[in-house]
Every structure is written in C-alpha cells, then in structure tokens.
Length: 139
Length: 237
Image (cartoon, rainbow over all chains, first blue to last red; front, side, top):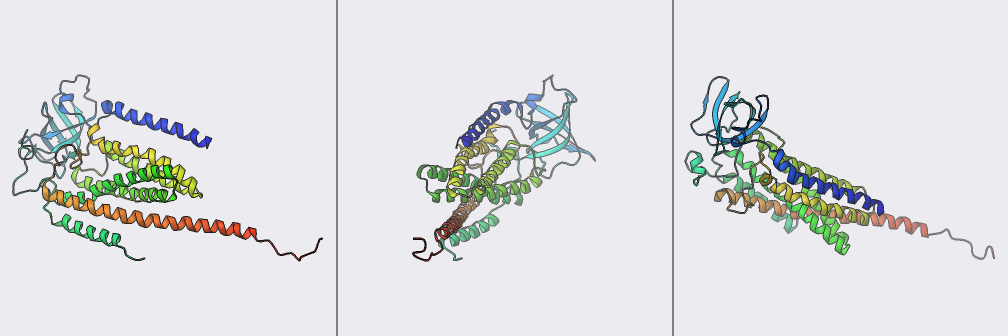
C-alpha cells in the first residue's frame, strides 16, 4: 500500500503540472496559427521565419495562374496577401477559413501548404449560394 | 444469446438514425461529406459518456466496495476506448477531404489521442491484477483521476486557437446548425447512447461470469486440499 501511494502522489503531481502548463503556458506560446493582426507590423518576424497563418478568404480576392493561387485573408482587422504554390484544397472558396504555412516578407505571404479551417456552422443549402454575408448576417 | 429489449432498442434506434442521416439535406459548404458528422460526433459523445460512467462507477465502488460497480466501470471504459478510437478514425476520414490533412498537431486532436491512450492504459491496468478486489481498487483511482481529461478535451477548442472548430451544439449560446441536420445528429446521438447502454450491460455481465469462474476455480483448489487420505482407524494408538 505504501509503495502504491509513493507512485500515486508523484503521478498526481505530474498531472497537476501538466494541466497547469497546458492552461497557462501553451495558451500564449504555442498557438496553432497566427492571425494577420499579429503579423502585420510585427518587426520581430523575420523573412526566414516559417509559420502558419489563419484567416478568412476575402471575397473577390482570388486569382490564379498555372502554378499559384493569389488571394487575401483577413481576421477582420488586418488583411494579408497570400501567394500559394500549388493547387488549392477542394473546399477552397471565398469566405472560407484557411490556414496557410510559409513565410512573410512584409508585403506578401508565400505559402506552400494549405489547410481549410471550416467553422462550426452547418446549414442546409436552400438553393442559395454560400457567401459569408449569408452565413454571418450580423457581421 | 437471447435478444433483449435493450438490444432490440439499440438496433432499432440505430437503423432509424441511419435513415435520418441519409435523408436529411446535405450541408451547404461540405455537401455529403458532412454526413460523417453523424458518426463522428456521437462517437465523441460516447467517449465523454463512457468515461463519465467510469468515474461515477469508480466513486461508487470506492464508497460501497461492491464489485458490481467495478464491472460497470471497466465495461464503460472498454466501450469508451472503442468509440474514442472511432471518433479519431472518422475525424481523420473527415479531415482528409475537408481540411486537406489526415492529421495535424491541433490541441483537440492531440488531447483526444492522449485520452485514448490513457484509457487504453486503464484497461491494461485492469488486466494486470488477478484479484478482483485489488483490480477494482487500483483501477477506481485511475478511473477518477483520468476523467479530468474530459473537460480539457471538450474545451480545448475554445481555450486554444487550433484547427478543429468550436462546439456546434454543446455551447452556451444557440446551436449553430439547421433544424433538419440537428434532428439527424440528435437521432444518432440517442441511438449511440442506447447502443452504449446495451454494450455496457452485456460486458459487465460477461465480467461477472469471469469473476465467478475465477472464484470457483480458486474455491475448487482449496476445497481439494481439505480432503485428506483416509487412514485405517486405531493404527498408532
């Protein structure tokens, strides 16, 4: 029984540390992606820094040629221009959330990896076309 | 094995939910891909439910020391591990076409995988004791501690900025889902819950039989040792 307790107390301590670390540390440091407002104007981000950037695709901003897709993403405060190398994802469209990975030179974000971040809304298609205004009537 | 009302209810509700999941209109953005939700969400729900049942049964065991509670705790955890695995698998199948990746190091995904392995460890712990009382006591402690993961997994999508979207239904404000889709989702959640009840009932009965067989075996061994060879009376005196 004593040995069992000797195991249990460190295990509980470890768990407490883990939970505390997750709640207070990762929250600030290890975000899955940055948003344009955190990137634009941040001089500490170097051209060589590779990071993920997330935001909503600005309607009307998409243009593409043979190998790249150019579009803008916004977080509602700042907008950034993305040049994505390669084919976009299946669900890539105006108004959808995207997480792109690449580098930022102060003007253009060069991405080579794209993940779609869909929101938590599920709507039936009543013959209408999906637009952000339709999905977010209050914004 | 005889089919019982609970089993029949499980199959019946599951069949109804299956039909509902197929006939409701598709999601406007994802199309038919969104139907994976009717398996993914109830699986994740069963993970939460199972491990909560394991918690309650573990506390009940520690309070009343009845092996009946321990068997329920073990059965629920076993079902929970299966459905956590199913939630992870369907999440990957859903993630590939919609997100574009099978897996990514997002908080929700990582923490769900951690929860899967912790409860796999719980099941391994249960198997490492021959004595049912010892098994019950040790695993009850882990069954209580491990449940802390449920709120962490559930709120991971609101606490940390990740890829997985926040909750659609289990949220403080209105559900962000149209009525027909919500109907199909609630149908499948109800069906999975009945399936859970049926599986836990069966599994704890099987464990009860196993424990009984073990007791019988041990009792048999000691009963045999009580029998001594007959001696011819009046020999040594």
